[in-house]
Image (cartoon, rainbow, N blue to C red; front, side):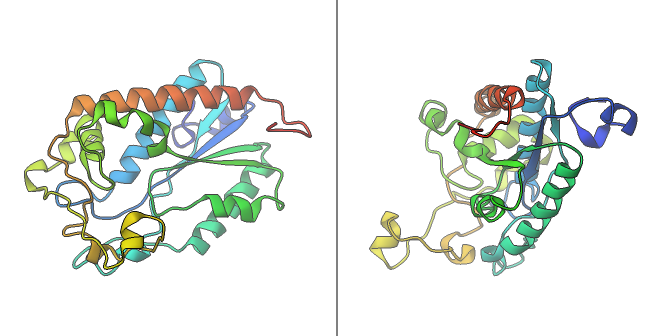
Length: 256
């Protein structure tokens, strides 16, 4: 059993500790091109959470990893033919988060990290909604942004979804579920509007129109070694933050 993983622990152990930080992973259940499992976002974010909490716990942080939320906001995936994306709405995520924050608060945990593994889960607006309703400190970490500055050093041509980066993570950490021989090139179709294509006007993209087989980015240069390199950087950075957050005193000027 791992003492930093709530789902593996007993009541006898959990109640014997004073927990400072809870980490709540958010994933999704959706297609990832033709070669990656539907649980990709969940497998990735959970592995990152486990490794980061382990490193932080062993450095003295009182940090606890909560079970992963396996369903994300996939409303723009629902017209993918045969897609089987399982979607919740932002309103549903807010309701779940509100209830869990209240549960943690009642049990003395006042720092919560929302560890996000799915681009459709825009969690920052939810923390704004709760900002004046709770004294639990909420912060959002999109794990795929943690080491984004290192991507050019690791990857040939990182994309966005089931790309070289995600495929590398899959080859490194759940290789038995990968079918790389089935992958397509992950080409994106441009819209008819230059402003949208340039990125200064944004839309909720209809996934069945922008992609061929739900992938965005060519996965062909992926390797397990690249996935391991990325994981090491992500875990080092996230665990360091968890150690700092655990040790920080919550006073009237927190987090400043």
